[in-house]
Length: 495
Image (tube, rainbow, N blue to C red; front, top):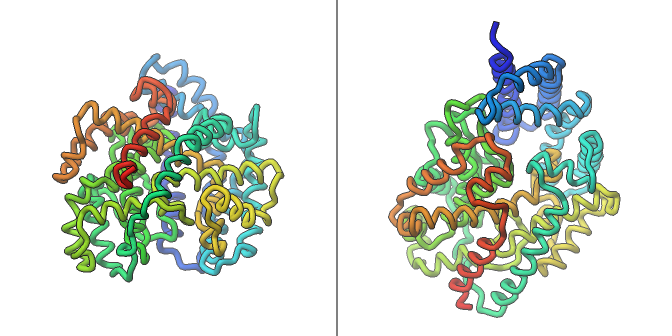
């Protein structure tokens, strides 16, 4: 009879198959499913979620974990696998099956309502769903338990060990450094980006964005790009990773959205093949994942060197750019100006967008703010932090897909990812020399190789904080991020 470790591995492989089925149904819903399928899809996902939860939280799984923990050699990948499964098991066993089913059903229903409400600028249509989302999130947090703040339990689901107190300290440190930079930039003549808006042929956008993601290393033999209302990345093995983008009148939205999601995709495609379909596969946390999407979107994609390589091809695809030189294009895509849409925000003001969402989530969870009052609270905070007020809810509190899927506690990980991306880039530069010389020549393999060795190949073997420590020698540090922004934008704006 196989030992406990082998039986545990087989059990988790079976569970991964269920997760893949649910993931495929979610991907299909966001990319291809007809609107009329929403009710049935909600049922399918809720049933599969219940089946997965009941199998995962079974007495058999608990016994296997206890036995496997005794068999695993200290310091081995088996020991790491047991630790990962044990953490997930401990969290899952605190949640009743009916709550898991209700979350899955609501996420499927909520996505369709959100798409409709956003398209029609109709927050009242979405409000009942959002009220249920926050009610369920409160129930989840109470089941999981927490010491200091209800937000801690939800944030920990996305970033193990992170707390609301960590977020408060992080945002305060960033505001102290970036607000003066925003003011200094505001005193300078604004960069022109009007040439980036227009009626851009969708098929040419598709071809150009595919060219970019292929160039940086995203393998289209093991992945694909589709269109979604809100871009995302998903996947079920190193051989099947799906990214999405969206096309519109602002061309950089498709370009940088594709690079962003390809960054997530590179993390997943470069997980060790020997760990595929095991609990050690894939990205270890959302902050680590976001560090990679932001690396490829901003540190690579928004660099001058990147457009030394690709502006001629953009001009060939879109003749309207024929008269736009490199300097004008570079300054245009790095324009700093308070804006309404998070995914299109510049690097300097981006974190204010996640701050708004973090504060609103905390207030709703603690009953300091009602769901019905979210639009006004959102608009007031945008006016306070960014100096602009959304003209409607579609460009305000309805812009993100996350709440419709029940993802409360997620948004601070975007900012954590921003910080980590600069920390890793500083070390990459130390080891490889100036990466921008390679980027200008279209040589991305050394960059991808460094990230694969240091981050992607580690999968979930270490906790997020331990992986950061192993790569950087310490914890998350905003210093490289702040200094990097100051250096770049002092040059862009002549400060």
